[in-house]
Length: 113
Image (cartoon, rainbow, N blue to C red; front, side, top):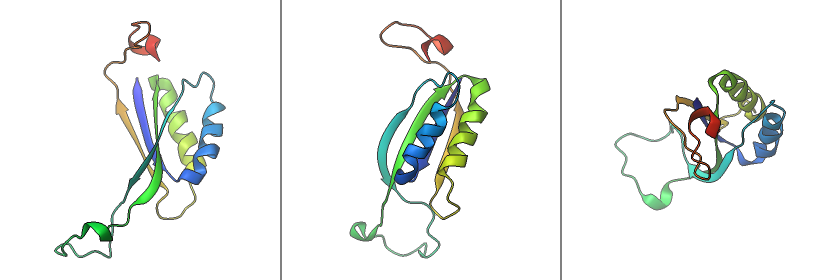
């Protein structure tokens, strides 16, 4: 099993979700509103940080758990639908998932997805 996390532009969420829903047997998605920032080339490394001057960007984080064989299709769907070609499009992380347990039934592994 794989866990796929992506941070994307909020206005692209509907397009990404529609793309994901077109995948056969898509298992579901968790969506969270988040803020943060990426690399900033204009900041000097020794410059003191003032909290009120930090510019956080609003993003959406999506989390999906899929069988191994579905992971690449999900990643490609997110990438294709979240891409604008501009700075700040976001990132996708894919990690191996050791275990999953469905709380309501106690099922484990891929049966719990």
